[in-house]
Length: 245
Image (cartoon, rainbow, N blue to C red; front, top):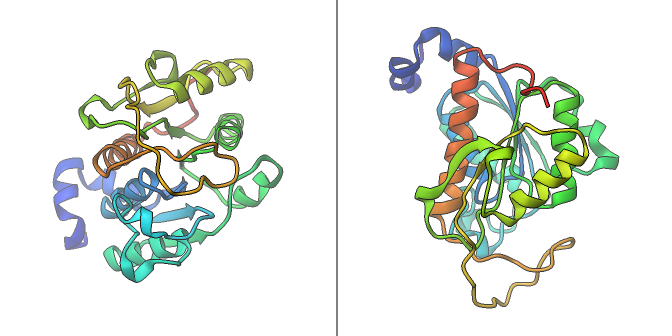
């Protein structure tokens, strides 16, 4: 056992660490939520990570995203994240993809086997297609819901989509998944009602009407909860087909 992971092994056990070492997790979206999730997976001994994001690191990312440093400004987030994680766990196999997941390109992202998928995608249409695709292919998946315009990380929780409340994104995703015949789906969400945020000077990216306000602790906490769910599922060997709809 590598000394780097000895404290994790003390908590989870040697068989669990072996399962993590032989697991491949894909993280879709490497912003304030997905980036911290990817780092937690790497630090916990997951052996292979596919890191997917189409954006580049910008100055406005410095307040909350782990791969955002002054030295990485202008780099693709997938590459910047992979660079950081390779310095944390050189033995981890890292597959950065600088691309946006979309329905008409989905097969490009499923050329390899995943043991788990983390959905930290912002765009609803892309998120819904990824969830539906994972369920159809019996790949375990967990999704992050809204963390923008929220202040209280203590309210975040892991739950089934049917148990969500108070989150506008959860309401949309729940309704659209039900239309697709998916009634059960694991998510990280907060019931905290969004705060009214001041207008900023940053222009929204294509497909977004506005940019939510965000500080570090809420998206980072959501990312760590996503990682917790994935790690514990993989560690105890319970990761398998998604809960039947």
